[in-house]
Image 1 (spheres, one colour):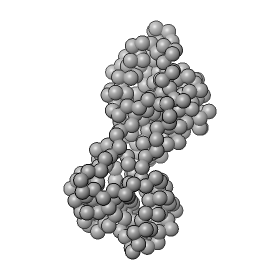
Image 2: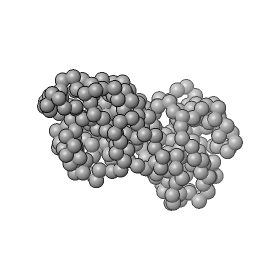
Image 3: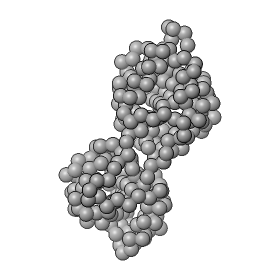
Image 4: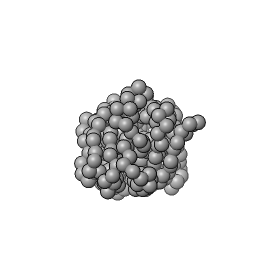
Length: 267
């Protein structure tokens, strides 16, 4: 890269952490930042800087975009459960010889009094609900994607919370609550009380924005079925905060992105 050119960074975003990272890097004069959003939310909160919306067309499409736009570094700051794009990023970065970093908020950790029941997938979560028997009233906070996994549970009643309205298939006995975090503890307590919730189903998204529901469930003695998050692709370095990711990016600007930095990319 010529000395008078800006380094180019692509952020795979759509999360609070990705927006914060773009904000931190917006003052870097030697860095051109583009944030990529999947476009699954109707009215996304846009980060500062350049923004592109929509998919890349798989591994080959992303690799081609990295090469054609002369991207010098890639940060995967997608949702912890956006597993497909993370693996696409790892393969594309390796092919294009672009250094890759993953930004992942820490997982939630159960505390005293929590009744957490970890499962490996939405299908396993549905199986755990079926095993409860009876006609449970379920607070389902796994988002609008993947509701088909619960569609066959005719005996359960579901309160589904999501940013946008879900599309079929979903459970027959479903009430939708359209809302976007962050959520308050008092608000979560009221939801559990008003809807007489028996069990909470959530993904291990981590972070503070949606964590109050876990405290409310513990206080109410309600079990929580927690879907474990997928692992980051092997070989990809991981940081937990936007500040750490910004330092990583700024370091590459300061070193003018030497060619051997790509060794830190994915396997």
